[in-house]
Amino acid sequence: MRKIFFIGIMIFLTTGGLAQQASGLIDSLKLELARLSELENKEKELTSVLLKLCYHQLANPIESYQYGQLALEIAKANHIKEYEAYANYYLSRSEKLLGNNLQSIDLAIRSAQLFHELDKPYEESYALIRIGNIFSSEGDIINALIYFKQALQIFEGINDRVNIGAIQTNIGETFRKLGQTDSALYYYNLSLYNIKAESNSNDQNMIAVNEATTLGNIGMVYLEMGEYELARDYISRADAFFTDKDDPYRKSVYQCELGKLAILEGNIDEGEALINQSLQMAQHSQLKEQIRDFSLELSKFYEQQKLPVKALAFHKQYKYYDDSLKNIENVRRLEQQQSQFQLSRKDEEITTLNKINKLQRLLSLLLLGGTLVVVIFTFLSIRTNLKIKKFNREITLQKQLVEEREKEKALLLKELNHRVKNNLQMVASLLSLHSRQLKGHPAAEALMAGKYRVEALTLIHQKLYRDDVDTKIDLKDYIDELAKNLVMNFNQDFRLELNLESFTMKIDKAIPLGLILNELITNSLKYGKPHDKAPVLSIAVKKKEREIELFIEDNGPGLPDDFDFRNAKSFGLKLVHSLVQQLGGTITWNSEQGTIWKLTLAIAKIS
Image (tube, rainbow, N blue to C red; front, top):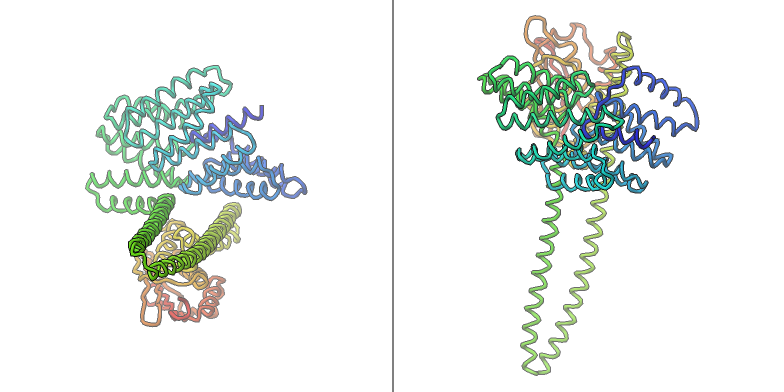
């Protein structure tokens, strides 16, 4: 019975998942979590509840990730390998929904390895399907089909037609994304045949989900083929099925497809509204891939409608999310570079060996003279060559040892930055969660302020991990991303003006500077909004010969006439004053037209 339950929920997750449980179930699980947290020797029960919360929070991938991460840590600490495998699988789902494909593949591969060690072929096969799905979304059809085929062999061996149909849907989706519509329709129809053949299955809801997903995907193929009537019929059936399901991923995708269809049929207003609703749904659930895709659709639409301002805004949003989804491509390029490096090393070795062979042939010709001098010279040459080879081998071994240690150090440092980033993200999410629980309480604002400070630190470690650098970050990129995140978090209509010169600085100086910037930008967003004109936030970085000057300016009402920065009661401004002294810099302000903060730092002290 336990295996049947797990198989059911794993199929949900593999095909996109449904979490139809009432909010009361999640609330009861949270109460049970709180109760178990106060007891001793309840690690296994605690991990089980965390895994259930991770699964049922499909509509909130960030919160789902937090529960899964806690479950993974407890399972590892207490050597509960089975729960560790499940936690890796669920976390892979959360990372995929958040657009972190590289982390999602790593977690799915780890779960497959653990299930294999535990002799759980069913569960292993679902992990293989997830890996195939991620490669399919990246356009890597070869690797996707390899993993799908491995899972398919397991289910064909036991004639499990529901799972065979689910994998055939995934294969069809892979071909659809590549534009191979005939192959896509072939596998979709095979999937429908196998799914419907299991009409006596105990889990009719699972069958209905798989069938609705396949119908919607067939409709998307017909839309690409220009068969609008068929497309509307299939996509509408899928959209109607998922309307009352807590599945923002599928609902937003099929609604966007209906919007595209409406535009093609001339219903411009209806199509625009549907795509915008899909984008809002994806933004609410933080589905990065869907935000990227829907933003691109709206950019194309507004360009066709000759609305360049809107088209440009959505294209910028598309580029922002598209750039954040490139981790796996960067890894592949790195692997290619490493392979090319190894090939070039081999070419150098071959060239060296060819030179030695030429020298040996010359020595052989000299031996034909038969003179004693040539014999002695040959002997000395051979001995010299042996010494050179031995010396070269020793140097090569030493270089390899140094390279391996450097790689290990870089990997450990990168992993450290990754772990610090994840821990800081968890702290920020917990602060946000408690702030929502204390809504209306004076402590709520303090918790949100703490969250933004933690996110400023998180961004530093995220850039160190993502950009593959050791201990320095680019101030221009950091300020750009920090400012945009804060404007987005405050949901303000500020026009952001950035004039930033590139400058690289140490992480131990970037951390206090990031906190200073966070406080000053946050103050402008909270108090710098004018009453009679559009709000503007300007940030500039100017590099001089020996100094860096940072300007943060808004066009709001300005500071009070009796304002004294050094004696300010605000914790945030006290923190700014302390951190400026720590960096050995100076800060001034002006309130004649809005508020202007000027921070001056010596390059020698921060670079």
